[in-house]
Image (cartoon, rainbow, N blue to C red; front, side, top):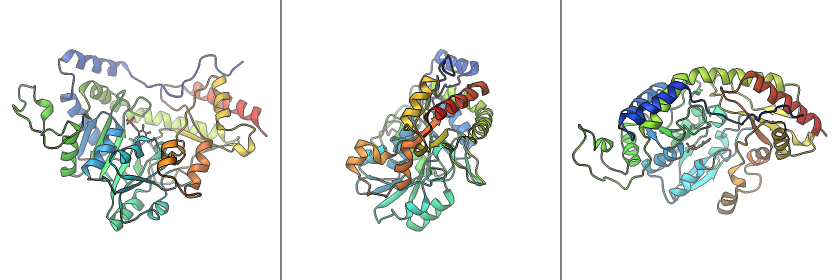
Length: 388
Ligand SMILES: *Cc1c(COP(=O)(O)O)cnc(C)c1O
């Protein structure tokens, strides 16, 4: 008999009645595209993360891309980032004709290691993209010091880190740009969507214009009674804007963000206690003095003690009715990056040795403590059955 009769998915978004009503209201309002709800969400989100400017977008990927465009990063340039991330983080660098350079991560958090980043800096390096992996903020003091010393820009991939603080500083107001994701599996969802924040007025202006075809300011208002009669193309921009249906859902999700963060924090503690007796399973660590966004529960499997690999454990958990995820397989091991930007042997030792042993357990407010105990039971059963 499997631990669960009904399958526990790796993630389930929580859209409450208020969210459904907010979306319906927009659908009935006569204004569906970018408009007042998007502006309201931008203001509320900017206030939450403590950033002067917040630009609503179609995705986090769009935000990372716009940041590179606004900073003028292109052919001949190098951008250093983490190999333990979603492919989009590096793909956008390739889209700009620049070269993504991977630096190794720290074993405790799987965040970019500032010392390894420094070793990768060349005269062509223009920017660093720290990824706040699983919700643990990167060592931003170290990255800012590097950026100042070498005249580099910082673009943060905060897809996992809406609620995080790096010491005294809230994620979202630190680097030149910070990109957030509202994809369905993230801490706040608009189904698809993202936000780009910055404290720089000029960069914000550029990114905003580029996000809507490169047409002049407030172009989204062009069909409103108080909108501009004419608009002009000032640069060949993109179609990356958020729209009001998304923003209405986002606003309702923002209301519950902290409540949900607390629930996930409690679940992470319960996982840590419940896994303490399994030497084959290790949870990622946490540095003192930070605020974790509690986005993912990532475990590292000690496969030397097991008769099966990570995929074997994943399949066995699935047979017990538990869905899991993988965050992430080192980008240096993906065919495109291995072929196009091969890493030298040993250069990404931590990332490449660990990424085939990572597994993410379900962690979301819609699951119950009983669901979580099922995950623990299933993991104990699967590990016991596969011990060497
Ligand atoms: C989800 C994710 C992205 C991409 O977010 P989208 O909103 O889907 O574009 C980028 N980076 C990381 C680390 C992610 O987890």
